[in-house]
Image (cartoon, rainbow, N blue to C red; front, side, top):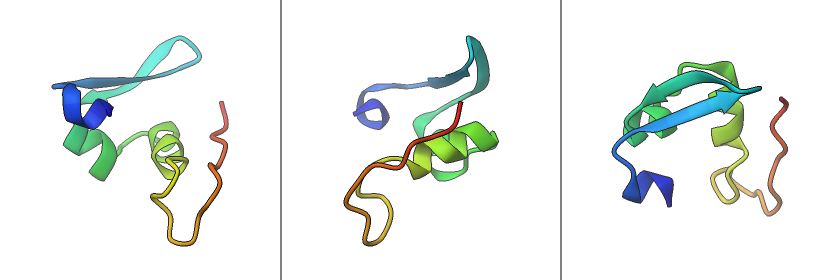
Length: 57
């Protein structure tokens, strides 16, 4: 949903912004390790995945 309605997304970890940018950057080329974990945890984005994966942090 966020990728469809937002012009910019900020990813926060422990109250701090760790990455900010347009949805295409956040979802297709995340720079932060935490953002990569969050994107990997999106249900249905991983082949054969039926359950969400928890992100650390």
